Image 1 (cartoon, rainbow, N blue to C red):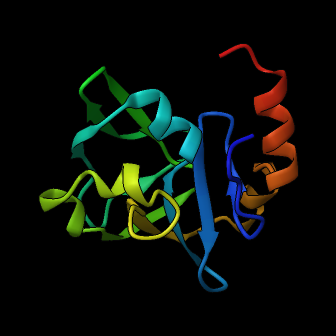
Image 2: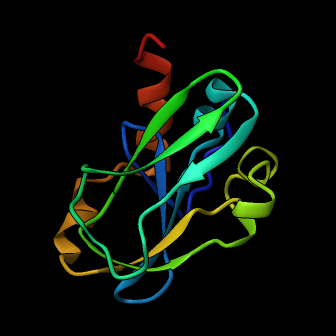
Length: 131
């Protein structure tokens, strides 16, 4: 079974959300996603100030195997990008839930958090989905 930190919320597209305050959150991809991708070599991310909609594409992650779209798990405004990833994209593989976070979003619609999965729900989703 994959590692699913219990303090995070998840999407069925394998992104995670860590709420940092009442209205901001960090976003990354799950251990399952990085494992499926293989070695991450590049990320194409939105600029700070970009408005993002829940479950809409916000960027791309390139690995040695494929290029995959990153979807926003929440609605809001991009307020920070993890600059470390431009020099060390492998952080997404090595530490997907901590140093490998991708971006920070100021949430403009807190009800969107209700549409995300808990760690338990995400674990069940992985065990029932044909990947």
